[in-house]
Length: 140
Image (cartoon, rainbow, N blue to C red; front, side):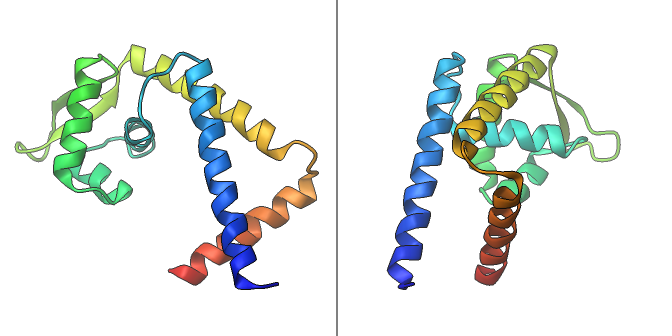
């Protein structure tokens, strides 16, 4: 198979997937950007979480993360509290409202994933995941 077909297929898949996610978020009434959502996911998975850890996880600079965090704080989706071991740092956590937002995000993504995987059986999906991970590893 020519390399251009692989690249074009991946490009089309990536853009179709992003469109499906954006549509699912919009259908759920979510107005957050993908960067906000990635930040929220980092906060949830890295608990206890700091802005520095989010910047490292998302490979964004701290100034970008700080702007995103201000938006999320202003919306009442996250809260911050003092760090017990580092007075210069703050621990970030989802609020009750933030947990509800994450449930909407998770449900939206489940819907998009179901659309993406329609017509594929478990073996097809396992093969896809295995191959895509191998491709990512090859590029790192």
